Image 1 (cartoon, rainbow, N blue to C red):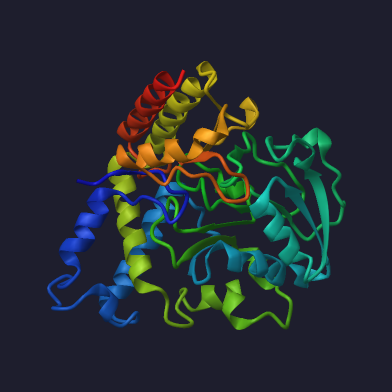
Image 2: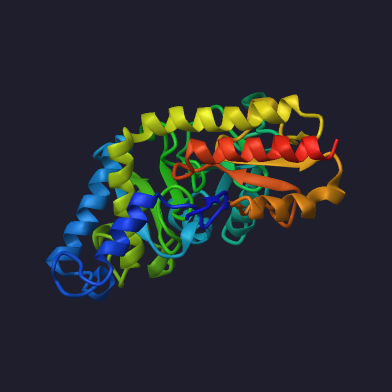
Length: 359
């Protein structure tokens, strides 16, 4: 029997996707071998790649003037790719919002290639909120403006999209495909796959066409969006199995009703858990209410000496991977698209029982 998996990443995958992959593992489409054993340039795999791209375009209503790239290196590689690809148009300053560990990693990488102006930071309140536009201090001549719409570790999510005059760049690793998205407001969207897209090992970048010509001349070939776009994301051998599985996830999402259905479901799941946390005197959320993530819900016990007992008993109850990130401690429940409402219902019931037995 499968258990409920609240891991922040690599995260839960839809069970129907896993079952289909299992069924097709040894003999894919009657070829007598696995999809990961065939050439990425074969007509069969090219069809897989093209369908995955089209399904993602359909899910997010991606305009025709954007390239969809399937890339190596996860979102971390894109921390480097963003400045490499956008600092070549004569501007070597970029605006960044600092909201936690992943934003900080992106900032530090960009500082290797140009000047970073930290527009706003939530460090003053331990990264428990998303700074509003009234606090910004923009540079005025930035090559791009970068933010992290959802901080996986801290459980902070922006409830607005920044309005800026330069290309807007977003690391959507942990909330992409969880709600409708006005892609046209962004210059670049990138995301590691291992949360809402598919397994680890691949990343997606959605890049507006006009930004493909802004790279620094010495950019490494493997980080060039233009090279990837010109080669159909196949300048080198791509992670084919991860691409195939991501495509199955896109098909599953469309069958569930698309991102509109995921948005409704994510609100139900997160509201159920937050409502319990707000009622409880035993558990609490450290994140300010207006900035609480729908995807990643950190929580703490009033008595942290009970943390180990909570995690042990939760695992015995079939509730996996609830330990918070090592940098912040406590607990964290990640409620990505593949995590069903039943998982959150089971978690809240367990928390209520745990609280009752210790008060």
